[in-house]
Length: 88
Image 1 (cartoon, rainbow, N blue to C red):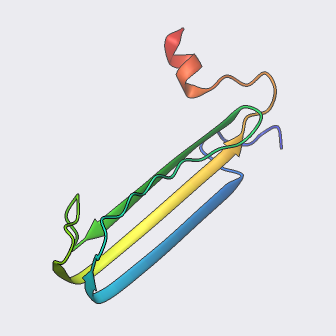
Image 2 (cartoon, rainbow, N blue to C red; image 1 turned 60 degrees about the horizontal axis):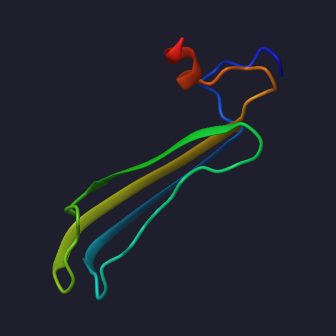
């Protein structure tokens, strides 16, 4: 465990969705973030096609695809984060 590379995560979750047509009846409010105790670090993000940012209600979007990934890890005690390393 001590020889783990900095880019490896303890947990990774990914999902993909596709649709021929999609209509939003309400504007979505989406917030996602990796979280953990103690000394957690991670990333979250999505790639999508066929959907603008932000989406509009009542519009028919066609041929959409959304890919999402969330990854997180707990830093071992004493290991500096990438932010700490950049500061000095």
